[in-house]
Length: 434
Image (tube, rainbow, N blue to C red):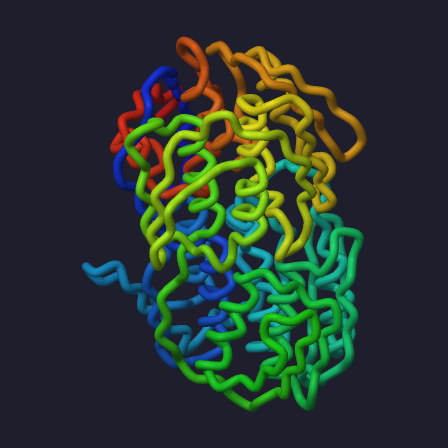
């Protein structure tokens, strides 16, 4: 499979009020660990709703390199069966591991399944340090022998893993990827494992629910304390991936920024239960919407008030939505602030918004936003979520915004530009290389 990055720049034209229907795709962040969980059993696993993203295709290619048989039905259902993994017990270093952060989920699954794993460190966006020390600490507590080399980690547990009490608290709260890795390993460990300060994100909850379908014994799902009683074997499962809460939140902020004031944008598959902090913040700012089941109707926001947002671990305001929120804040009253307590260096997009005329003041781990009139110009996308914010800024700006390195957007949003065009946006993509 060809995983060459298609570099392109996007030309975004401002001035069109968006309206119509947009559908939220399956969650990227839930798909990664659930795909990895298929390695824990020899039986077939069926997964529906995995978004068609470059990052997902890389993850599937890694699974195939490990020996997983993957078939895709016309309905988009993936059948994965890892009846026998490759004899050489290491993740093939094909360069794919360093392309995605989600490759880290292979660590816990492979260690539990074959008692040995060797892999290079994962990649991902440049949004500050994203260490794996909590993964290592937790898996060592389960009995793994760990050797960290310059660019890879080697873990072994020749006698199998054993249950332990593990504290996963870090500077930014519980680790999502660390919690997922350790839960997968603990599911096949001997005895009971207790994880304290476990991450409570919906993606961790969804993984735990899938593991229970596989026969795992897990108590405390959704809480910061998880108790796992190890079992000898796990079975296959069938599961539909939940709607992507970050994508849905992006569409909601996009609607407030660039939506028509009279005709709503309808967001289908809106996961309201996992976006409580966003909904609370926008309600405090004076935004309004109609929500029936998982269908939201929302119009362009007018006369919204300032807000102070703190990006925190779930159920706090999502760090992945702080850049799009900054764009909305340029359209509201003065006095808005954003503080990111998870990735305090996640403000590389600020200089790009300033090029567009945004009046912003930065301080350690934060940003103050003033009401600004944005103007189209040439800017650079710095990471996945910043890319979405820059598209949003372009749709609200006067004139044309030229976004270079816009290929980041294809890592996390399925058919992003196509969905926006369906709402009336004018966006052109110019391929830089082929």
